[in-house]
Length: 108
Image 1 (cartoon, rainbow, N blue to C red):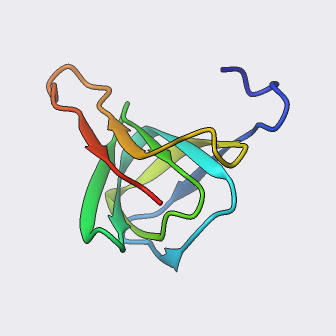
Image 2: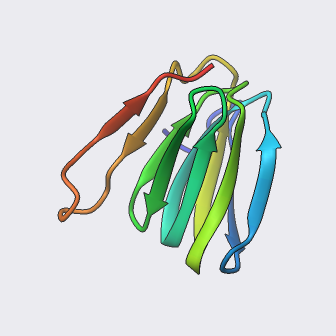
């Protein structure tokens, strides 16, 4: 996928240690890649938490109710917005060799 494809936009953002995002939803699909640090996403409807660390990617479908808490070292992420319906489920893609597990979560 290229950020230049129709219906996509990409940006980079950072937050300091301990920053908090309250529960919210998006009307677009979102792909997040952690460039550094960590952030834990709280999937409100399923009661699950997913920690995103350096090199990991999180696919978050539109309408997924979630909040987030930034880790102790802060976080920098690259975020891409996709048209609603591009992603079918919440999915963590582990990007580090020392973390071979892959988690799949069902989203809204």
